[in-house]
Length: 82
Picture (cartoon, rainbow, N blue to C red):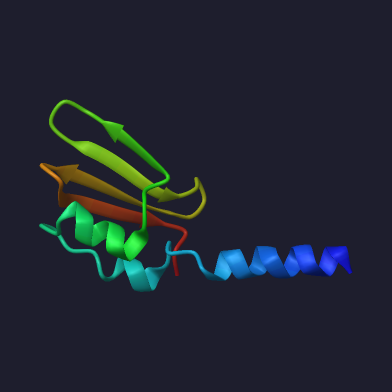
């Protein structure tokens, strides 16, 4: 019974992932960081550079990466989304 409950919980969390093709299609260049976070939630990782910030939602095999300049989307890419 415990295994079934754990599996159900895991599948439920995977289904709720905001890292999806549907959400990727909503991203646009020029979009404000707040709008982006309304779609994807908080980033799993952000790395601040001198003139820009690179943020990633997801993991190595399935993710959305976004480059922000002055808190605006300038570049974005995906991996593992169908």
